[in-house]
Image (cartoon, rainbow, N blue to C red; front, side, top):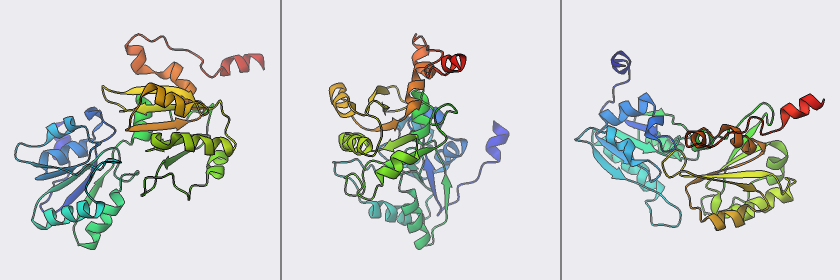
Length: 279
């Protein structure tokens, strides 16, 4: 480990590193992320960053919260980007720590473009995105040979907070067996109705994974038809990742966290062995 750390990059003054902290569990931080935390002078972090991740920061580091949460007062994106420039120009080692991956619905690209505009050197450190890692902690793979050869990642709202009008639901519905949605729970009733209108079955499984990979993780499995009602009945709240498709059924066999707590896993949740035997 010591030899590995000696080969990790040095965080230079006046540079900004855009780093993904993963979906929540600090154990999912990459070595590059921990290396950045240990060297940074200033850490500008988001609301979705598990604060346990900040324990890797050195004692003299300054922590700046720049959280953006829907429906609540929050910093403007342009202000956050310019703050990164200001700190870098002051000779600081600036770590922009973002939940998940900076370039997956994380607006990291916008921040990087501002750095380029102002001549600030930067590095991008990818993180595990919730649409993959969060579902894995729920026992739901985004791909499986028996169910799908494609997966679509989309956001459930645009800059106005509404479901994007530009979304081609018919093409998405027909073109992708599995749909993974970020920031979609608030509008799930409308989204589910559009998917059904576009040809998805009312009985198609859907799962909601809230606070993924953390000790507060909650998972709800239901169908498109009853999605909104079940979310309301369960009292679930964001942050959540939502997945639609037959892969949801695999949770009965792959809920490894549930198995640790005593859940008995199903060996053949898709019934594929029975179908093969019958054939």
